[in-house]
Figure 1: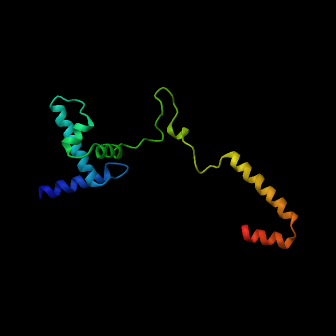
Figure 2: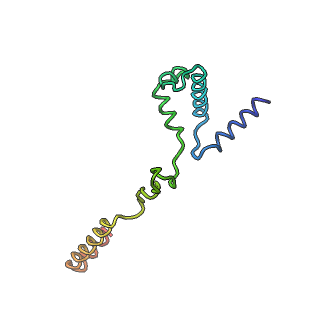
Figure 3: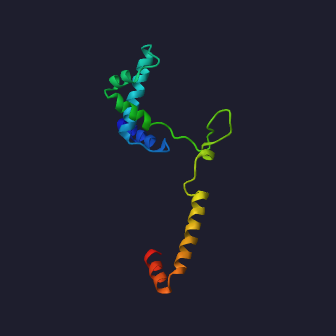
Length: 134
């Protein structure tokens, strides 16, 4: 029963400990990497290389780098970008939903020009063009 309880607790931690959930095998591999780091620290190597950690865990350096990249914690949009300034990531990130003023003005001018050209055509031709292109 001990193992089942332990497994249940681990699964609950995996599901609820992060904003972005990762698969259990990633957490297991990360645990092995952290254990290898602790082992290196106990042996006196405070900053083990990626090659050393990968060798101890039994994975490639490339896989270790991907693992460390995947398990980084996400940044908050309200977090300051620089310590000495009060600028947040939200303030410097562009909103893709808002149309750029130059583009908006260009579209308005194009509509006005097309309407003028449609007014030159006779009503039947104008109707055909409007039905075809909207």
